[in-house]
Amino acid sequence: MRARDLNKTRFAMLLFLGSESVFFIFLIVAYIYYHGDVRSGPTAHSSLDPVKTGIYTAILLSSSGTIWLAERAFRRGSSAFRWWIAATIACGATFLCGEMKEYAKMLHEDITISRNVFGSTYFTLTGFHAAHVTVGLLLMCVLLGLSIRNRLREDHGEAVESISYYWHFVDLVWAAVFSTIYLWSTR
Image (cartoon, rainbow, N blue to C red):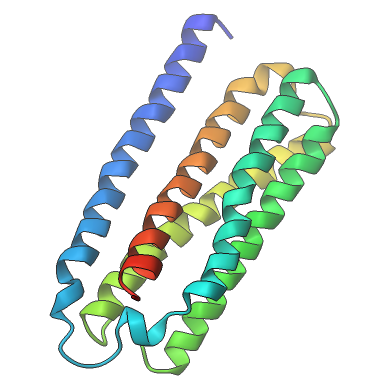
């Protein structure tokens, strides 16, 4: 791979993440805009548990550290890459399980995407984030699988870097979502 191509890959990933940022900004703005329109039924304050979700949030945000360590280990050619990428996958999967438990609780309480404005905006925003977490987990599983089979080579560095950028983005978006939905609108 030529250095020029590496820069193209990095630029393409940053461009993609920029477009995804705009998408999430619009979803967060919609949530904030419609927040006061809930006339009846469930609200963030009556439905969400910021403490429990805060624990899952801490686990997810810690995965930015583990993927950073995985990327560093990869650049050094260290087998610790496998352990750090596996730890990142574990953190992301734990977060996703926590989110699914919260969805199950809400659905059990008849809080759905079609129930009211809160349900619509909440499930849309968190659902799109969950989809992004799932994609990130699948990408990291591919990296781990290639590494275990000794098929992840030094020239795959741009793939590792791009997936790391993507994962940091997922964490950053969740920090904004958590702050908006769980901290701001539940008070």
